[in-house]
Image (cartoon, rainbow, N blue to C red; front, side):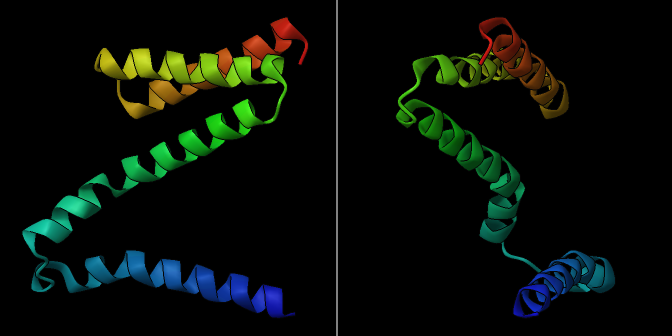
Length: 106
């Protein structure tokens, strides 16, 4: 029961945080530094997930299991540096990841 209460409170908190700027609109004044941090928060979260995934794959001890992850990260990096947006880059990374797993039989 306590777990479901925590999930419900987290969901309500997340919803409230997303709804507040829409309700407050122009009246909510944020500093330039806050706007800068919020602008890059999504990329920071994705970077943290990628680093965690790569480090977990490498430290797992099985190099064959780490190859699909590293190949997917490389594919996403190439597309990102070539100016593609996040959605096509992540789709390409997923395709490379699952394709490498299929080829390697991992």
